[in-house]
Image (cartoon, rainbow, N blue to C red; front, side):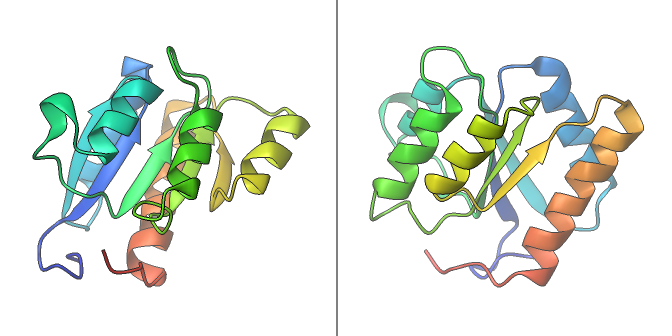
Length: 147
């Protein structure tokens, strides 16, 4: 599958854990969907990427954001709030992918208009299966908004 713009589906992963980022990359490699994955390690970098600032002036607009909550410098809740309050970004689907099982985190992120809240599974195979499921749903079932 390719994006509505005719190229690969652009995914922004906001993740400070290098191991989890590698697992997402692995899940993408095993998938049937043509993707470009951009990875940033914290919320400050995520917002610079999305706003095409600093070293990200040529960054692609993501079709989907995978967002961890517990990030350095600016946490995922702040990123989600900024994305969903920005008229130029708010239509990008945001899937929260985090270890937090806290009820307050779940409530807060949905109040901030997260599209999905997924608790990261502990096992390697389960993690890859969950990521593949997210991508399959968001990139083959759902009609994504135009840029």
